[in-house]
Every structure is written in C-alpha cells, then in structure tokens.
Length: 532
Image 1 (tube, rainbow, N blue to C red):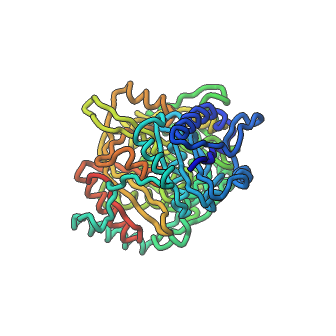
Image 2 (image 1 turned 30 degrees about the vertical axis):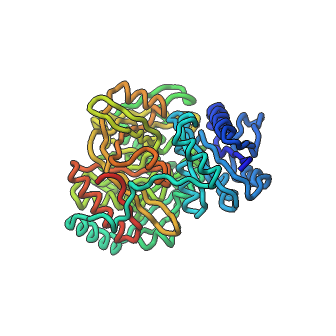
Image 3 (image 1 turned 90 degrees about the vertical axis):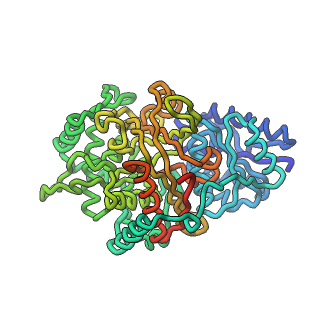
C-alpha cells in the first residue's frame, strides 16, 4: 500500500458540521501523519466547501458524486470526528472493492466514535467487510499496531474473547425456565411496534427487516410523524397544562427562560406536553405496545424536541392521559416503552425487557443510551474504566438519583434542536444493570448482553464528564465487568446500548439469563459478554 483515499462523512445539519469542522481537520492531520510514518500517503477524496463552511459529505446525493471519483479498489479510510448519517456513504462502501478502514477519535466532545459505531453497525448489517481503529491522539501503540496490520494485510483482528455464544454458557435452570415460558407467551399474544417514520439519521442498522422481526411475534405499524403533529393540534391547552403541572408537583425542575432561540420556554414545554398526549392516544388507537419517534427529520421543523415525551413514556409513574371521547385513562399504571430515534432494534429489546421484568417482579423501566465515551476513574471506591452512557433525554426519571425530584429539564442545544424543547436530565442511580443490544448480522437477528454496574462518582467528576459531552442530557456512569474499552469497541455494532436496572447483583444475573433464554426462544442468536 502506497496511497489511500480518505473521506469524512458528516451530519445532514449544516450547523453541526460547521461546529465539528475544526476538530475533524485536526484529527485528519494526525491520521495523515501516522500513515506517512508508515510510508503511505493519504489523499482526501473531497474538498472543503467554502460556501457551506465545512468539508463533510452531508447528503446521499453528494456522497454518490464523491464515490464516482474514488477508484473502486483503492484503500479507503472513513475518518470520523462528528456524528454522521451512514446512508450518505453506505451505497459507495457497499460496492467498494478495496480495503475499508473506519477511524474515530476518542472524545466525548466530538462524537466521532459514536458515529463510527453506527456506521460499523450499518456495514455489518449490509455484509460489507471493514476494519475499525480508534485513538485519542493516533500515536498509541494499540492504534499504530492496528494501522500497520491494515496497511500490510488490509484488515485488523481485535480481541473479542469477552463474547461467548450462549450455548457455551451454563444457564441456571430456573432462569432458563422463566425465560422460555415468557417467550412462548410473548409469541402467542404477539405485539405491535408503532414506527413514526423509519430510518432516523441514516441509521440503516436500526431498521429490522420485517421478515426477521415477524418470527419474534412483533409486527410494525408504520405511522407518520405528520399524523403525530396533526394529533398534537387536537390536544387542548388545558390538557397540556395539566401534564406540566403534574410534573411540577412531582418535583421536576424546568430551567425556563424567555428567549425562544436560546432558552427553554414554557411554550416549548407545553408543546412537548401536547406531543406526549398525542403519542399516547395514537398508540392506544393502533394498539401499539411500543413506539418510536424519529423527530430528527420532518418533525424537527414543526415542533420542539421529542425527548421529554420519550422519557415520560418510558416511566411507569407518568402524567395520566385520557381518551378524548370516553375519558378512560390510557395505559394506566404502565409505561409505554419508547425507542429513541426510532431504533427498532432497541424497540424489540425494550419491549421484551419491559414485559419480562414485569414477570420477574422487577422495576421495568428501561432505555437506550449512546455509548458515548469513557475513561478510567480511580477514587470514591471506584478503580475501573467508567463509561459515559448518555442520550438526548429519553431516559426515565425512575433511573435517576431522587427520581422526579432529581430530574431537571434543560433546553436542547440549538445546534441539533432548532425549535428547542426540554430534556429529561438526571444522574443515574448506583446499582446493577443488564445491558444489551439487538442487531442484524449475517442476515439474522443477534443479541449481545452482559452485566454492568452503575457507580456514583463525585459531583466534580460527573460535571466534568457532562461538560466534555452534552451537559443537558441524562448521564449514566457504567462499569462493564470483564470487558475492556477496546473489546467493547471491537464487538459492539451500534451507537446505542440498552440498559435496565435489577434489584441487586443476583437479581441482575437472574434477569440476564432469563432474558438470554427468552431471546434465544424468540429466534435470536445470543452471546453473553464479560463477567457474569
């Protein structure tokens, strides 16, 4: 290998690309230098656009134009220091004949590693061969060794020994029996997954083909976000006000201001309350057991962010919603599991988790997070690699220290959410969790799962982690026993990770194996990850 091409896939939103341009340029400079030391020159396949103010591929249309100029057999680098829409480049990568290397920075501030994990999941689903590397400064030996292997062999082998097929793991009999019994009943009753527009932000990996989903007993009801918006227009002002008042009485705090451009305003919150009511009513109308709202396309131009809605839906204790005509309370005493960014893999996982945890007698609230970033922490009784699990606001208050009283709502960053809207922000309480991910690979549904522990960090460490990522969003400090940072990155096929609490360590282990058995019974290929 003497030369390699480099592309930088980006966001659809110009503001996000502009903000991340400097970090991308700095990272590319480091990557080029690393290749140069190995005797390989790197040529960028597209240039900086002065009019747009960035050098990212920002649409599928532009991506196709760029790939016309890239030799089909060229070694190709996809370098990411930004959130990216995978479909911008998936077409070209799916037909590329040369070796492909996805590279991400290791940073909480510049979400390249999150974007790369989404692209990797999409490539895996599409059956495209690729290699991945990641680094803080692109000079560490782990990165350099991998780089040399890719240059010499066109691939890198990472250690994924932490993941073991379920058939090689002994499942406790009672947990297996509970899981199998649950799955058979789940299949008998079936369930409807409400999908408010598919394919959020180019997440090809987050779409489960119908022929793979149906054998699990779940069937999609394809809904439109325009219908959700239309339903919002029928919600009365006093109904929205009642939801807001309910949250205030619970002790939830809203950082209200007056500037619509920069602050969270009461009008934005009331708009979100209308969306919440509308979503519950549509779910009832169509018989949905779980729903997912895309928001980032279409709805973002009409309404404030959906995250307050999503966090409330995922909580069993939530503001009551009543049928417009009969006055009956809808889904009384139940959460309505919501899968953020209409990630159907998380939707299937979340619904199974919710119902199984109910059967086990556990608190069933669960959510996805972004596998955002992490670093080692020593102190406060902790000496381990602590991940930052962070999502834009869909986490339920039941997960937070203090519940609703420990929950605040802050304005979503205008870079991503032009019309504002509040988050559901809190610090996840210490305890034991089961984490998981449903994904598509080799044409089948697969399921990775393991145990985790949420630890409590000092306030200053928590704030520093928030400042380095997105301080408006809910955070979870997670330790994954028996799994290193690099093992997790090498194996995980998504930017998302599903989490649910268990009452204690033994309860988490019981839940883990019951769920693994249930997923196997539903037809998924299961792997147990880390120390269990």
